[in-house]
Amino acid sequence: MLSHVFVGVTDFERAFSFYASIMNELGLKLRFRDDTRPWAGWQSPDAPRPLFLVGTPYDGQIATTGNGQMVALMAADRATVDRTHATALAGGGVCEGPPGLRPHYHPDYYGAYFRDPDGNKLCVCCHTPPTP
Image (cartoon, rainbow, N blue to C red; front, side, top):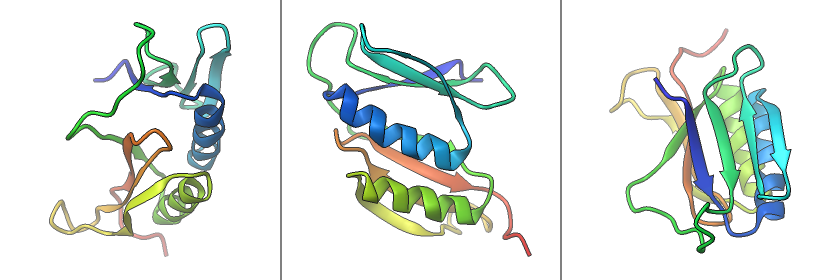
């Protein structure tokens, strides 16, 4: 369904450090980093798409956040949601909702919400029951 998602950032080095830690927790691999633009992209280890991209806006203007916009990243299990959320906060992110069940979405929805250092809102979530 998705080819790629691009998140605009103001400080590429800060953003790369923040997102590299998160992508590592999620098991996603760096596909490229181009400091001349600057931008970087990650992908699943077993598929070339979708890509998750961060970088400075193409038009050269300052990156701004959108009201109501959020990117949700899939985690393999609830423990990964917990670790990724903790990693985001340790890397300068701001909590927008701690890890936990959100049964109003569905009985097994387990998610956590945070903002990156530029204010972009992200979610990391798992849709499966807990592993025994």
